Image 1 (tube, one colour):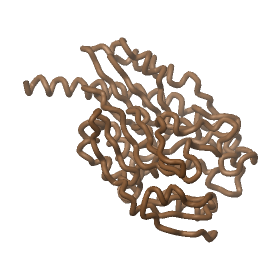
Image 2 (tube, rainbow, N blue to C red):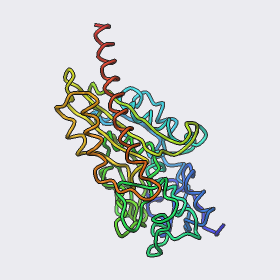
Image 3 (tube, one colour):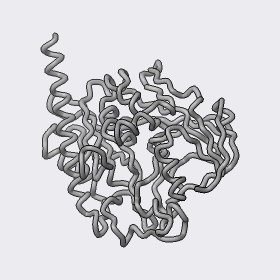
Image 4 (cartoon, rainbow, N blue to C red):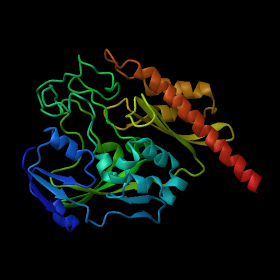
Length: 336
């Protein structure tokens, strides 16, 4: 392991003015692994666990503000999340293992690095790790790589389950840096690789995430998070889908849809959402939406299976979300 300076921050302002080449550590479930692998080489590591960023609070406008250091376990089981954002709770509980969820933080999950084996192997060519060196995944074993959002420089998949749920819900990130505080739409935070895959997000030098504020929940929505993987116990997604849906009778009034396991960033399917509005909540509508969501997918030698798999995930997640909404309505009627 390379040597680095280590310190503990006692305020957000001091953390945000740390020296160049600084990495912030909270749960450390990604950072420490990558330092040990010699993939990340920070000169300074700043422990931010003492910062007051562990609150979850409902705002006056109906949104939910989540502190950056709230653990995945606490967030998944928080009453506000379970009641108003069940798709996020399901996504969190589908990720990692109980031990990791107890350590991993909300902001750390947003910053989670790809599990592409070529990125994590310093002997391999990887434009994301070392710009301009090439991408061994293009012609290598790319079964786990992306079919959406890739480029000729990179097809690494974003691994987070939590971020798929947040992408469907919609959110704003609060960032603190040497220049002060700013906000970024969650949909704009993670960048497509293009010609610069080493620039993964909109975080600037010295900045850290202090909070994530979820959009106000869809009133009366049914929702579902579906994760398809090699084994159910502990594995990253081959394809996943977060779906929310509201109905007028049997007609879709509003839909939100996001994919994981198949794209280079948390993937919001806005065209598919628009195509669902005004349509009957039935299999044919869901299948058309799935076709639209995957129309720009580009398969490689080993990952073409992800396209039909993701379509199936969309259809099943929408079907389950619609059934969830119907069940809610029947329960409300029986209690009236």
